[in-house]
Structure formats: C-alpha cells, structure tokens
Image (cartoon, rainbow, N blue to C red):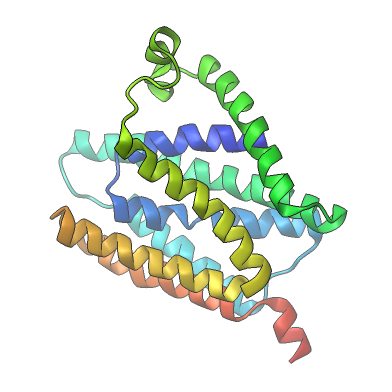
Length: 236
C-alpha cells in the first residue's frame, strides 16, 4: 500500500496544477468506485442496491467534470490529460491501497496508530524511489531536492497543508472507527461545501455550469452510499 500511496501522491500533485479546487475535490471522490470493487474482491463485501445507484450517480458526476468544455482546445486538452486523468488514476490507487489497508486492519486486528506510522515510514521510502524514477513532468522538484535538500522552498505556510493532511489522516481513522462510515460521509460532504465557498468567496474563481450540475450528484452519492450499506439492509 505504501508504494501505491506514493504513486497516488505524485498523480495528485499533477492534478493540482491543472484543476480548480472544487473540481479536484469532486473528482477525488471517485475513489469510492475503486474502493467498492477492491473490498468486494479482497473481503467479499457487497454493495446494496442503493449503494450501486449511488456509485452510478458518482460516475455520472465524474463524467460531467471530465468533459467540462471551459477554455480553448489547448486548455481543454491540458485540463483533461494533465488534471482529470491523473486525479482519476490517483483515485484508483487510493481505492486499491485503501482496500489492502482495510484487509490488513480487519483480518489481522492491527493497531490503527501503529499501522498508520508504518505506512507513513514506508511511504516516504517509496515516494523517494518513485520520485527518482518518475518522468520529469511528474517530479518537477526532483532536481531542486537533489541539489538543495528536502526542505528547499519550505516556509511557515508550508506547514498548514502538511499539518492538516497529517491530522486529517488520523481523524478519518478515528471517525471511521468510533463514529462510523455514515458520519464520515457527511464530513466529506461538509468538506466539499467548504471547498466551494473558498473557491467562490475567498479566491473569486467562478464555478462552471457542469460543476454545479455534478456537485449534487457527487454529494448525493456520498450521502446515499453512507446511509444505506448492504449490512444494514440485510438486518432491517
């Protein structure tokens, strides 16, 4: 999983350069599709009929976002190949790695904190290997890191995304463990709403019509997928 997460991180960084915040956040939710497939193959966990409908809604939202026609032909090509495709591939990586982690935690009863630390350590090593082997456009800072060191370009503001990502990983695990997947789903929806507000109000970036159309599909799919798991339907 650490090696897969390292590839996912590089693809994610590539997507950041070509997509606005909201489109990235919405497309990133397609990891539900790959996660659902992986956990079925590895753990035999099936999706309920409502969850299948939710996944179809998510796929429709992803299609709308990936075919947004804003800008000229060259801008559209750059947005699709440089932004949409890497984010979708990163979501596939996330689903595969997440399924493997879920299998490890559920079948071996591993300590979640220790497991997270192991993934982080192995992830750093894997990321260094991948960064050295990746093409230049997927490792823009490679030469600078090799010449100036790992901390090149860091400042106090760099700690904000680093810290929030680190805390987010811990919080997600705790929310899933103690509050359940339903509340986690609503947290994701809340995060999408925050992203939309920040993009419009703080940064003044307009939200396209396709994005407005895709947003309720993605949000609705997350809510439905969280509220109607297969196990709950069987026991009801």
